[in-house]
Image (cartoon, rainbow, N blue to C red; front, top):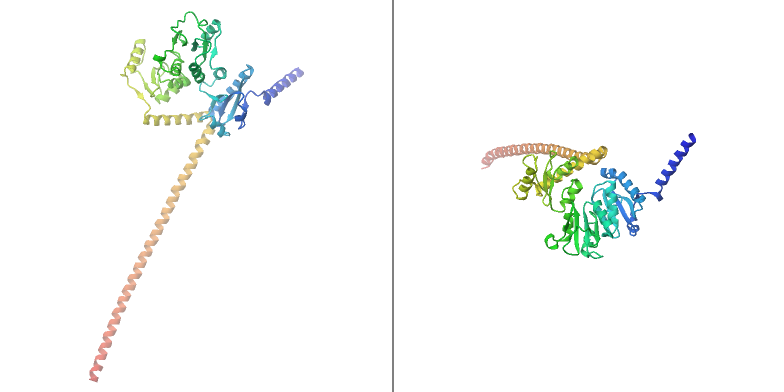
Length: 422
C-alpha cells in the first residue's frame, strides 16, 4: 500500500513538473521581444497590472483559457504581459486600462469587451482567429448554425460575398459570426425578393438589409446583432450604448443594478422598468409601478412621444457627477478586493499631502511670529531712537540758552569798562 501511495505521489509530481515546464506552459509570459516574434502567429494577450484587483480575479480564468485552447488544438497562442513593466509596448497596442484583452492577428488588433468568463473568451478567440466570412456548404450546416446561434448574418448570393460585406465582417467579427451561402443552401421558407442579399436570422424570423431604408451596412449590422428581448448585463449595456437605440430594461438584477447606477447614479428598486436613451445617456422611470402590459405600453409610448420626464443626460454637471461616482466606485472596489493595497495606494498619498500641509501651515505660523517679534523690536528701537533724539534736542536748546545768558553777562561787564575809558 505504501508503495502504491509513493508511486501515485511521484506520478502527480512528475505531471505537475511537466505542466510547469516552459515547453508545456499554456500561458506564456511576454516581454519586449514580443513585438518582433508575434508576426507569424495569432495571439490572445492579457495586458495586466500587478496591483489590479480585476487582473488578479482574471488570472485563474486566463489559465483555464490557455488550457482550453491548447487542448482543443487551436492555433491561438495565449500570453500575458505586465503593462506596467513594458509600458512602451502596451502603449503601442493602445492599452488604456487593466485588464485589457486583445487578439493580435497580423497587423490587426481586436479588443475583447465581453464577459470575463472562460467560455466567452474562448469563443471570442475561435471566432476572431478564423476567417471573417465562413461559408455554409450545405443545408444541414445552415440549419445547424441557425440552431446554434441566436443571431446569424448570412450573405446569400454568388460564391464570393460582396467586398462591402467582407469589410463589415472584418470590422464586427468581434461581436458576431458572418456566413455566406448560395440560394440552394438557404431554407425554402426564406423568401428573398432579389439576390444577392444580406439576411439576419433572429427571434424566430429573418430580416433583409435594404440599403435605401437602413443606411450603411455596418450601421445596420451593428443594430441588428441584438435580440429583440435579451437579458442585460454591464457588457451588453455598453454595447447597446454604441448603437444609439432606446433600451428598455425590464429588470435590474443585482449585477444589473450596479450597471444601471452608472446612468442613474442612485439605487433602483427591483424589479423595475427603466428606459435608457443611450445616445444622450438620459433615462426614464415610470411614475407608478407597472403591473400590466397596458401600463408598460403606455409608459413606452410616453417616452416615444416625449411626454415622459427625462432624467440624467450628458451635460457638464451630470458628467462631473458621473466622474465622481465612477471614482468612488473604483476606490470602493479596490478596498473590497484588497484592503491593504487600497490603504497603501490612497493612504500614503493622503499622508504625504497631510504632512506637507502641516509643514506649510507651521512654517507660515513661525515666520509670522518671528516677523511680529521683529516688528515689535523695530518698533521699540524706533521709539528709543525718538526719545534719544528728543533728549539731544532738549540738551541742545538748554546749551543755546546757557550760551545766550553768558553772552549777555559778558556784554554787561564790558559796558562799564567802556564807559570808564570814555
